[in-house]
Amino acid sequence: MDENRLELGPVDSMDALVHAVDRVSELNPGCLVLFRGQNNLHPTLRSGLSRPNARYQPDVEQGLSAVAGSILGHDSITAGNVPFRKAVLQHYGYKTHYVDITADLNVALWFASYKFEPRNVFYGGSPIRKIDQIRYTKREEGVGYVLVLALQNPETLKEKRRLFDISDLKPFLRPCRQKAWLLYDKAPLLPDPNEFWVATISVDCSKLVSSLSSSHLFPLPKEDDGFRALLNVPFVEIPGAWLRKDLTPEQRRAGTRDLDFGMRALPVPEHIHSGKTDEYDHKWEDETLTEPSPMQFWVAWKFNLGKEFPGIRGNIKAATKLTLSPRAKAILYEAPPEVPLRWPALGSDELFFTFAQFGHDKVFDIEYPYHGVWLHRDRDVLIEHPITADEKSMSVHKGHVFEFIGEDLQRQDLPSSCKCHSPQSHDQRVRAMLRLSALIEHEAIILIPHPLGIPNWFFAL
Image (tube, rainbow, N blue to C red):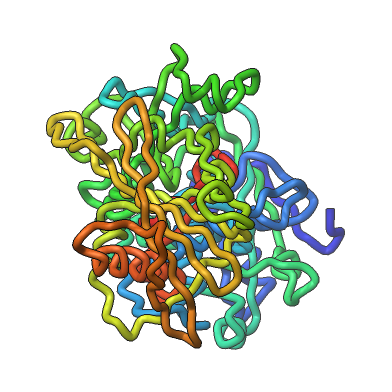
């Protein structure tokens, strides 16, 4: 421990805690005093992503950041609004390079004297859905810790984007209830948050009780409009057979007795207070992006392009899969013609776009066949094949060949091309898919990886 850091307590009453804080404040005149509550005391104060073995998933962070930006009303990413997007990440379940602190001593006391209990539950809908939950319970014994931070030049830290007051982050109620601030922590950048940690007050958890409640600090979606909007991110189907390491792709495609289930595309955890089942309305509010099994196990289907186009090497089983939500599909098709066409930078010359539908426990309006399109790139040449699928099989249909000439995409008529009477529909479909990257860049569409990390599978929301 820092030998210059004051250690006080353990305190066993609110008056004693306030007295200890007053003593620290007197020793640090003119400073902004902020707090942090912890169950355990560590040698250093570190943000979630600065701790050892922290897992950084930039695609997931970017996806949720874009969701947060849309809820906060941001038109685009700026240096000023990124921290507030990250505040949403921090306060609703994700690790960031920010340390949570509070201006309210009672909030810090609550976090020092309540323990965190994560759990998974399953909701018996269609499909069965895996729900991440968090519950806090009062510690009946032991010692908790209130860390006191004294900041000499808070306005300078704000100007340098190292300190943020997020207690008025509308429409998100949780940071407001927690009187939340954030302090940036990313070594070797300065300042180091530990520079401001001036005192540690130990708390007797068996005697000192915060006047706050978990329902106050973690308001439910019916109160917290921002939280409710985050929970509106849809669930996605998880084919149970994908979890079986002992199955080949062909065995997965053939079907198993493994249970399929759904999980949130962006796994924002729910906070449980009373244990009542009606705290979250999973029957009516959950939506799940659904697809038929053949599209989910595209890696088991074979279609060798060389048989149709000699000298071309390509196969749908090697494609990177992009599952489009109905919203994303509509945005791609309705985008103005000036949106530039680009091949998505996903490290693959094979892209398999599938058009998902929404399933709901009480409304079953799924229509077969499902549709999609497989695009193969050979430098400036694109080969298109429309795809359809039902519950058991997937079909590859004749399409067209396109060529990029400068920045313009032109259809080239070949003997093998589709003979339908609407070649313009093929033009529209290919152009729509190639708008994806530009629309992601402008945050009209959010691209995230599969929540279970299934390789080469992304969702466009």
